Amino acid sequence: MSQITQQITAFNGLTAPSRSQPDAAFVQNADAHVAAQRTLQEQLNTFSGQVNIVAGEMVANAAAAQDSKNIAEAAASDAA
Image 1 (cartoon, rainbow, N blue to C red):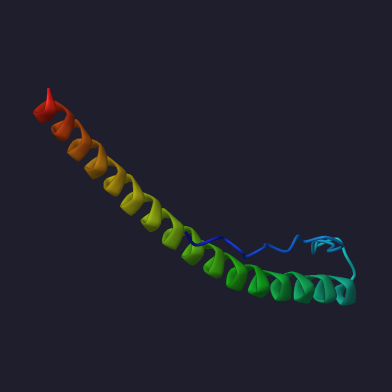
Image 2: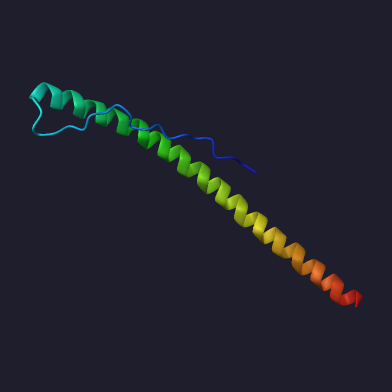
């Protein structure tokens, strides 16, 4: 089965831009947030793709398990 390997980077150390900040600080903080969001978007896209793969495998495995159960029950019923 596939594994989810993508890790999401925390927004540690970022100061949210605020209207009360001086212009230079606001621009610097806003730029840092936009850059972090670009990275977050890439990480979330990769993560969601991996989740979808694993979910599909789980559905297929559940269906195969149900088929095996049905075959085993039919064989047990025939043997009785």
